[in-house]
Structure formats: C-alpha cells, structure tokens
Length: 340
Image 1 (cartoon, rainbow, N blue to C red):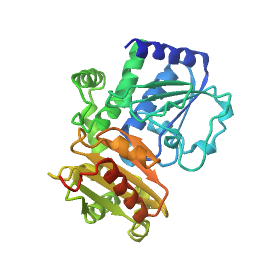
Image 2: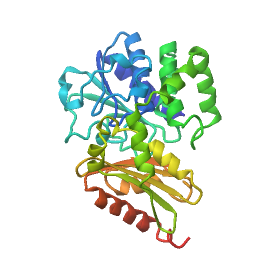
Image 3: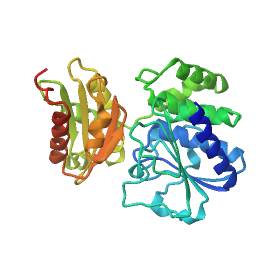
Image 4: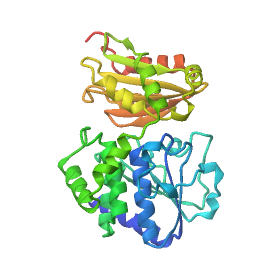
C-alpha cells in the first residue's frame, strides 16, 4: 500500500505539472479501456487540463458508445496526431507498446512524459512512471483508488465510467480477482450513478446482427485437441469477407471464448480470428487457472499477454500457423495435457 501511495503521488505531481494531456484506447477496446479512459478524461477536464482522447487503432464498439463522454473520443490513431504537442501521455489498461498500436512500430518522443496505469500481470512497465496492480480485477478499480489518494470528487459521469470498466472486466462481478472490495466500490459508484442498470443494459444489448453471425460461425467451427482439454474456434479472413463481417471483426472474441470454456472438460478455450491476411487475434480463456496460466502461454507467443485466467495475443502469421504455434506452446508448457 505504501508503494501504491508513493507512485500515486508521483502521478499526481506529474499531472499537476502538465497542461496538454493525451489519453487513448487500446486496440480492440473493451469496457475497461473505454471506461477508464473516459473516467480519467472527466477528472482531468475538471482539473482544468487540456485533454485529448483518441480511439486508437479501431472504431469505438457500438455497445460502449453510451458511456458518458464517448462523443469526446476522437477518431484518430497514434500516428495521426503530433505527440510533440503534448506534455504527458497517460496510458491505461495497456501492458505493452503493442497495446497502444499494432499499425506499425511506435516509439515515444524523448521529451514526452509517460505514465502507465494497468492491472495486467504481464505489463512490461514501459513508461517513466508505472502503476501496475496485478491483483486488481480492472484498471477502473485501480483508478478509483488513485482518485481516492487525491480526494477527487466522483461525479455521476466519472462514477458511470468507472462502473462500466469494473463491471465489464469482472464479467459482471464473477471473474477471478473480484473481491468484496470490488463490490464495495461498485456499490459506492452505483449510489452516485443510480442509472447503472440502464448503463449495463446498453452495454449488453446494443449489438448489430453481424455480431451474432460472427458468433454463430465461430461456435460452428469448434475443434477439440489434447484429449478434449483444449477447444478452438476459428474464423479466416476469407470467411470474414464472404459474410461481410468487417464491421464487427474486432469484437466478440472474449464472449465466444467464455462460452466455450463453460463446457465441462474443455479446460482451455481459444478463439482465433484472422482480422487481416496473416494477422490473427487470439483470445485465451480457462476454467482452471490454477493449472493453466494463460498469461504464460500468451507471452510465449511473443505477441500477447494478460492474466492467468484470461489473455490475448495478435500473431502475425497465417491462421493455420498461428493455431499450430499456440498448440505447440501449450504442449511445451503442459506436456501431460493429452494424458490427463
């Protein structure tokens, strides 16, 4: 706790010294990325800062567009802005530079001050100041504690954004890592933003029909490996084009992976989606994180990271080769998986 307070005070000192501040969403942005970035956007604006929030590589998902402040997110990626215009870049919910952009090689300008705030155990701590809390179930929860250090007034807009981040990244308070503290924080936020049930409804019930088509194709593709312990769903770029699913190609991986892992005996669920030729996004989920540390598997691909129970990667190989690579890594890390 002393280390958290010490780093938090360093962060607030850097914010106080800065005026023009940049925020971003990570590639394939989710509720925690969007909720955390918008919560910080509102806080910084209330402190009188000049804040820019960019969407990053991908468009804002439709189901997250009703989170307060979503209309302030600029449709730009990191290569479309002049980083030299900013005093400070606050990087949220991102474990590596690849979570800032995957559109090309990216480096910070030498003069740009950088802060990382995250909860992924695989975080590479690549900023000048790094606040990484691996036991937290969501970056939004880390921000709640960070704002408490400064005694920031949590307005209804800020509460809604933090609630959205915590709710989505805990899977509705059911994933590992969710604690009584998470529920206490959520309760406090719900009191400040009593329309939280409508917020949840909008997040969970705002899908285009193409998303259901994508999910159905993935579920229909399931293959079983290693004596039934690994289940894989996959979709090629050719099929994405054939079914005109480009608009939803960056969504639904985690939802499908969670569906697959719900099956008894399917200990590791993998979803492979070839979003571009030789660019494959992979979602990892497990029902047994004590045995299978997915963060190790994702990191071993040299293209991903995450948590023990949930991880992801973007592999620059053809779909078949990406599947082979991940299966080989699983076998190497768990040589007895096909003998259990």
